[in-house]
Length: 441
Image (cartoon, rainbow, N blue to C red; front, side):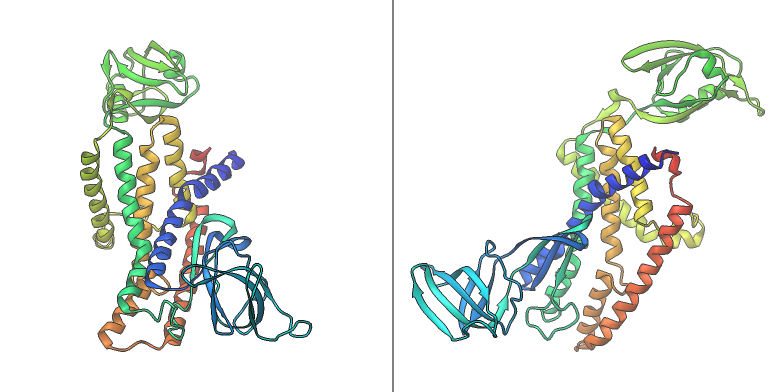
């Protein structure tokens, strides 16, 4: 087994497909937080540890009572904080606002701390103590290239007026739900894209391997051959169609029409007889889309089909616990997947898209994962977005807030439990993978 190839595919899929889905989730929180007036302290591309600071968004501060805007282009000096003494030069705009061009934090032991506000050649000189500071959002690049994160002020602490917890209940719910809602919208967009880009409606068969000294090997069949027809009859139902014909023809010659690269060939093969008396050719088969049966939907058709698929997937997700209890599905089929298991499924889909030269396999899988990401985060479990929304709803029913320190403890305990379960599921996916590792070569 080529582990280097497997790791390459898994890591590449994580970065190229799963990473953007997580980025979209965090972008939903970011947009609504900005609209709600919540202070977003940092929007990080990737996960910590931090690699470098990219830039700051627009901020402002007050120097001795005078307000000045800090544009995104202004370099924030080290040790800039409320209470520090600073010296800066600002340009006065026509609307009366001061926009800082330079800013320096003063050393109380060595620098002159005398308050100053005067005109100079470059604009207005402002020296004094910082009485209010809004540095703007820090946009950072982090070492783990997987999605993004948003750090907001006070998710449970309402003491700061710009914190998430200090906002009205409707805004808190909107900010917390925004990531999941955007994931569900993106899931719909991806499945619509799959229909528009082309969806196979008829299938042929690709020979993935040939058993040595078998009837298939004697007939000259090779891995990679695509079976188009048997006895002149097109294979339109894929694997089941070819398997049915072969099983019904033990020790009888059959004519196979195959595509090998760009060359169309006709080969005669005589299936052997297996212990049960059925025909046996000695090949491993994989579905392959019939290029003549790929349908590209119009946008209205794709939207209608995409909505139906999304609704059906949501209903199926909601019904899983009941189906599991009734025995309609096995625990193995309902097993949760970690980042490793999700990456396996995405990798297989990405490989299929590359081999088939169709975007629909990876778009469909990415749609389901985006939908699952959104629905999972809405579960009313501590530490998840749904758990935080649940606390807001309890507050609305009680008419008063649960003490922030108690809510913080609940979410911390919930996070510890979720991380522990995540590690267990990840170990399970490594030892007993959802898809055999050999398939990812």
